[in-house]
Image (tube, rainbow, N blue to C red; front, side):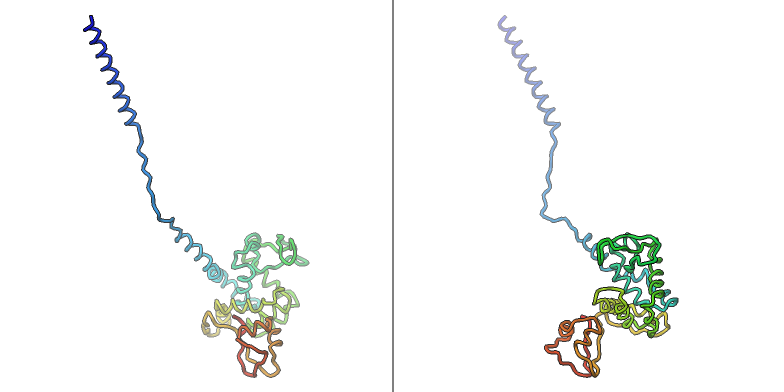
Length: 263
């Protein structure tokens, strides 16, 4: 009897041990191995940054390429220098990227003014919620820019200038009140000479074109009666700016002296 009892106990223990081993094996087979890869290398954003910078850098060049023919056509029809049209478009619209331009296709900052019965948008400028003209597309804005200049008597004297004289056109626009920025003429001239926009004027006029260096600056030859003050007023600069551009330590200038006007 004792022997039979002992056998039963041994068999039972054997079965229990076998079941435990199987359960352990099953648990181990379901355990997942997790591998963590560590690296000290930063995420490479070079391509993204390069693309962004390239877009900013090429924005003005793309703008010129897009609208140069439109500007030249305006010059043929209305006698407005293509260089002036392009420079104003670049400056007023930030090469097509300004908030106003994006929501209105207004490339020249032309406000509603009396008599405008087209679409309009409101944008903070000289005062809050200034009224600006809104166009269906950029080309319509370019056409209206030409009509705007040719239809107002305050710009009439500009059309009597020698064709392609972008320097006097830039000054004349400012004198006629196109913009309140005293540096407006200098900014237009700087853009024209930086991007050689006057080559489009020469194409329209059928003249030969001499390429200028991108770092070329506009200058003034001192004549009898000139003073730093009179020259600064003529080009919408300050006396201090003229002195700084030319490394002058006093207000003395001499006839024939070449003064740099843009830095």
